[in-house]
Amino acid sequence: MSRFLSKSVQRLRPSGIRRYFDIAATMEDVVTLGIGEPNFVTPKHIVDAGIQSLETGNTGYTSNAGIYELRAAIATQIYNRYNLTYSPDDEVLVTVGVSEALFLAMKAILDPGDEVLVVEPCFVANAAAIEMAGGVPVMVQTSPDNDFQVTGSELETHITDRTKAILMSYPNNPTGAVLTIEHMQQVADVAEKHDLVVISDEIYERLVYGIEHINFATLPNMRERTIVLSGMSKSYAMTGWRIGYATAPAPLIEAMKKIHQYLIMSAPTVGQVAALEAIEHGEDDVEYMRQNYDRRRQLIVDGFNRLGLTCFEPRGAFYAFPSVEITGMDDETFCERLLQEERLALIPGSAFGESGRGFIRASYATSEDNIREALVRLERFMINNGFYIPEDEQLATA
Image 1: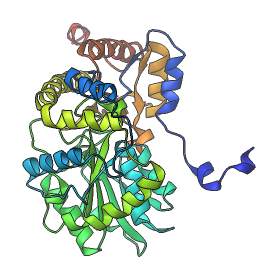
Image 2: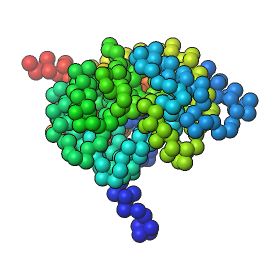
Image 3: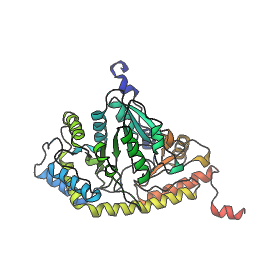
Image 4: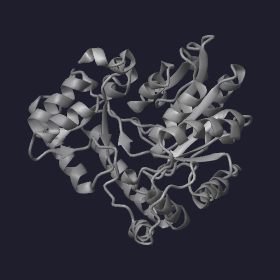
């Protein structure tokens, strides 16, 4: 049957995350830190708004760009948070999650063979979205030596005459890194020097710890060349509602909307109504969840470092990204053995790009009880395989 399939689809790599979920699904008593999904349910007042939408018969299509009131609320929120002005008429587009927004952005700007610099480690769909749009992803590696910050000099080494855009995701999945203003300015300088579009995926913008998130479009001269992607899934625990959005100058949004209207028509109406409720009345919910994630973040990072799995401090999202170098195993072997021996599911860092090799991704978007149990199993695995000696035994042999 492969003769019926397009070569472009056959060339797409399968998700490096999915294999571990499939294995874990065949096993009992598995604790997973693999899923990047809030364990909170959508707050009740948001759910009620969606239910009311259904019960009152609000079940038809919306405007292609999304409900006007929702677009206006998004624009107002961005102005209040970042002092950035976007017109709800033609500079905001509501999409089916950030995944659709990412594909639309790529399809809108790329001609066949155009190159996009992709900062990695990164979400597994980033390179695929570029390939599906006919472009060529050019991976730009980062490292823990500077907390996975991309640098202007590293971007420069990958520039060619086919380079069209830079794609980056900060706060980052899988590392939890947040780009400093100094490194953001380096990216901006490269983009301006080479006349590039910047696609900035900021879906985790509300989940930062001890710092303030900076919207990339606020940098000097960047609004005119930046497409910012965000949405409701992570901050408001609304993953299944599938509401994302893009903000950008009107010509870019118009191009994206043209594809969106043929591909999707409009994002789910009930999800849009719920999203409007979330933006207008969900700030306390966001802060409650953020504080919970912060406690879990500290718990899991301390646990990894205690066991010798060196982990830099993630300042955003809900992921930790420790190194498994101490074990002498590669990240895939480590995760496979951990799953088989202790029924603990983590994701190999190499699933997120070459610069993730030797690391593992652990999501702390789960309960503190699950995190504590995961650390118990991880410690047992480390002890049984001779990678860690408990403190009491260290003292006894001193």
